[in-house]
Image 1 (tube, helix red, strand yellow):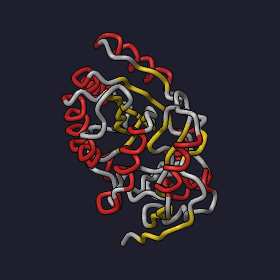
Image 2 (cartoon, one colour):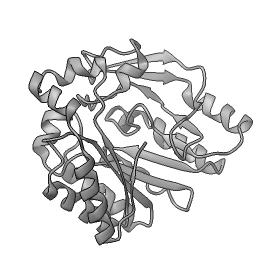
Image 3 (cartoon, helix red, strand yellow):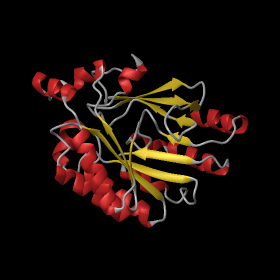
Amino acid sequence: MIEVKAIPCKSALSRSALPGLMYAFNPYVGCQHGCLYCYVPDVLKGRVSSSEWGGEVLVKEGVLDHLRADLKRLRPGAVGVSTVTDPYQPVERSLGITREALSMLKDAEFPVSVQTKSPLVLRDLDIMKGDNFEVGMTITSMDDAFRRCFEPGAPPPEERVHALEEASSKGVRTWIFYGPVIPGFNDSPEEIESITGLAQRTRSRILYDRLNIKPMMLTRIGRILSVNDILSIRRGTLERTFRTLEDTCKRRGVRCDSAF
């Protein structure tokens, strides 16, 4: 059972240190997808429970009013929607905060980069027309067994694939976030072929990243990984995997970059 609570909001747009972004817009704190590898509880440091990650969502009260004010006082720059929560997690279906925010950002002519795991993004393609929008879909694996293990509340990969293909077919610029790559779980040559094939079909750029185990993350990911698994991941190298990924992308004519 997901618990949804309101919390005070002090501002809507925060400065972002992520490459290519000037601002971040996060209407929610917490995420119903409950991914075991999520680093956000370590970043938030107690604002949400790490052990119950996925069971609680905090909604920023008045965030759209703050966004309206921020758009008037800040100089235009690229906005990441969202950077520490999925903007299209299930609660968004009824609240519609992300949709309204996208409309406001569009009117203010702020470039927007959306990242999600959810096909709910298709609801808002009518807003995301023009060069100021791009949609990134996180696809960690094309195998639903990986999703059931590591991303228990997230949509299955076939729904994400469909959403990416649909967005691309509507002329929206798209990209794939392939990460975190976890040695021995989603780094096979077959996985790389499938994900790069999807990128080629949808004319999507690929951003990739490795798993960096954080202290709070360890309490969750330790539920399914053995001590030996974790030690192997920490000692493991992905240089060969990423070289294969980059070579495959080059062969397919797909742009591919490290996320950080």
